Image 1 (tube, protein in one colour):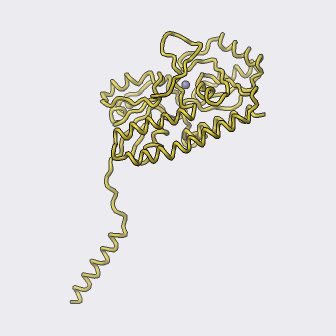
Image 2 (cartoon, protein in one colour; image 1 turned 30 degrees about the vertical axis):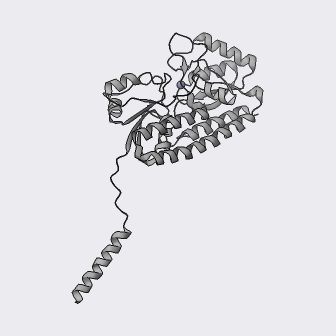
Image 3 (cartoon, rainbow, N blue to C red; image 1 turned 60 degrees about the vertical axis):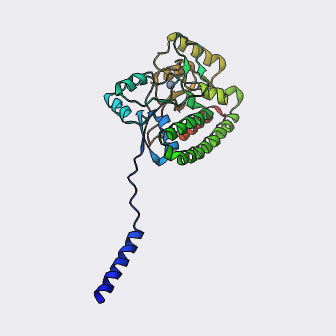
Length: 302
Ligand SMILES: [Zn+2]
């Protein structure tokens, strides 16, 4: 009788212990998503949340225009269930990499539906679309919609989660878009003009009305010609352009030379085609836009 009572007590105790211990998480496979570069990877993480495992090819502070894939990248592509690219000619190396990987995933183009800006001056007969669509926050919302659709198609069970994540992030993008507009409105009209090394801010210019002039075209592949550099130095002097900016992905020497020869001061470093690492100023897309606007304000507002 006594032994039985002890046994019952033990059983009850055990039941309580089991109930209070966290239930073992079901070994849920995360959706393996590959994004070609750091900015896109961040957008995918925001929509995918903890249902996805995101891998990127071109890392922080690195230049996707001139990236050359390593053999390990083909393995990353092969392992991915969803492959997401920027498109608009940004990742010229991607089609070959996908073929080499043997992947059956057909890449999703995150800029689908965005009206491409055409590069004006550098016509060489090939596709001169400007790929830097993410520099307009309104365009980033299109990226998010395309990413949401791609994740839902690959993982229908996550539909509600992806929709909720995307909605929360889209709210942040709306707030950010307003922040940028309000900041630019405080810059005197005649000072809304700056120099960068490559032409990465055309969508920012179109959306927010700050004019960017660059000696290099929309890709860092082509070097600036002496004539282009000379033309820009003349333009800086004639239009009294207040500042030139470095970028986190390009060689600083070109801008340093333009600054020295024109007298325009270096206004800081803008993040054009890549995030920084975790310790930098722009480990996320939201940080990247905020950082750039802060730099522009500091150089142009007064
Ligand atoms: Zn670029």
